Image (cartoon, rainbow, N blue to C red):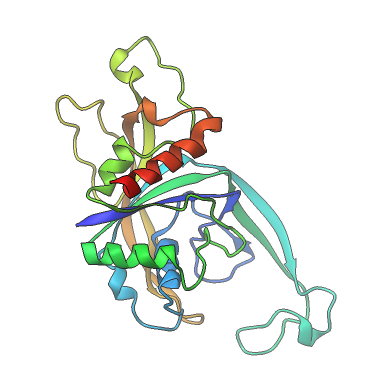
Length: 267
């Protein structure tokens, strides 16, 4: 088993939690498994109505929340002021005859780093597809274009360990509290784990802080336009200590990310 690392950052992101089109198009506060698998399938050229999602069932996804972002709501209309045959289409093949009004939720200025763990051959296949995608990746909606660097590392032996110890943080370090030398060397960062976190071992920088356990319905069964379906999974929200040295001022972030990405090329 090995993995790859994705950095999901951009002006806007939106990770919808509902498969049906509703007047309120919400967003989860983190990238959903459905959206990430959809991104992989699109990169590999698998259409919505094609089979093949079972190839992703063994992926393990770990999300590090560098910046949670700020929620924005966009009042959105489509198809207003036109004859009926030029307004938004219905599922029955007709047209609505009036403007469609939605309120679309986004995360502004959010940054997530995702460790994708899988069999070596799967990691190689996904890395190739994400480097030369059939359909371009986006952050939940087509209007949400990812920043660079997007694919941070094509192959690492332990991507979850990389998240905890080596991947640069897209934030500045807060001041250390109470002169605690042990805590002064680390920063608590939120992670979303698909497996319960392991207790910290003696000598590790700090204890595991379990925030809560949440159930989400975001495991895709089908992406078919008129037959989307999902099943559930359990996530463990935790705070883990990461080295303070991974953080830094915003003006150095891009160079730190580039230097980290180039480590793979020089290895």
